[in-house]
Amino acid sequence: LVCDCTDTVEARLLLDRVCYEGNKKLVYAAVKGWEGYVTILHGKAKIKLTDIFSEADLQFESQNTCSIAGVVSTVCGIIGCQQANEAIKILLDLESNLDGGIFCYDGKSNGIKILHLQKHDL
Image (cartoon, rainbow, N blue to C red; front, side, top):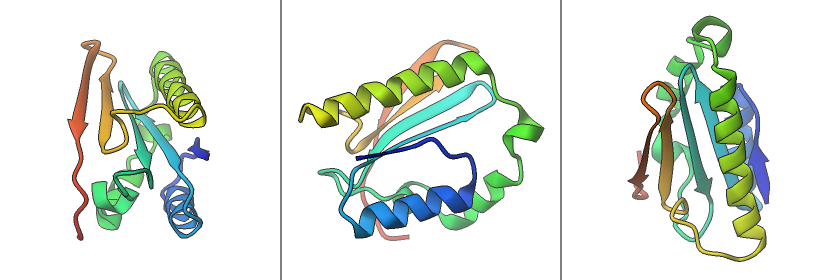
């Protein structure tokens, strides 16, 4: 089990590839501004990071980094807790709707959505 707490595209892609090759589950989390996301990669749904975002999209997003766009610390806390919760569920072998889904949090509106993900080739 690996938890992604990185903040560069290169590190995220490396973790994604290494976990895929090593058949390790990856709890992915990201925060930017008022928004945060958590999902489980390489679980039963076999979703990879590049199934959700193309490398080009990730590279484009990296140009608008946290140092430019800013990060709301409370959103980091919420997303970090959600990521830890998912890691605990994996360690306890409990089902998760984030294995094949993505938790989306909007700190401005306090909105939460869980979107269903489907594996596809880009």
